[in-house]
Length: 120
Picture (cartoon, rainbow, N blue to C red):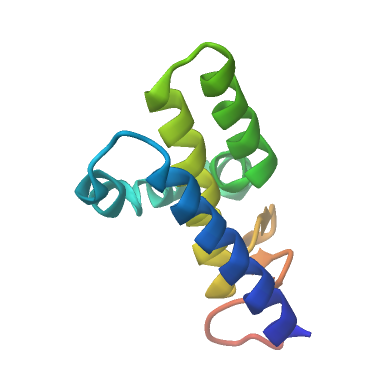
């Protein structure tokens, strides 16, 4: 099943890259900013509940799609780019096995436990 999910997420990442190619922006911008959404992990400084909420808000593809659609609606290419970047980054994270977080801690995701001691 994990292989199927990785293939699906790979398709989503390719879709995000394609959607970026429709924008009038340089590729280096996409590459440099690709990992910026991971800064949301800083929320864990204030506890696992807030950290999970902050991480999930930034890595939720539904939110990414809404941001992208808002950019289309108001004709704002930067908003469209932001949605595409969040969507693509979230798909990339899921390819690696990093899912949306549970409040128990960073290691506990909707795709399973990550890191050392996975059996916990």
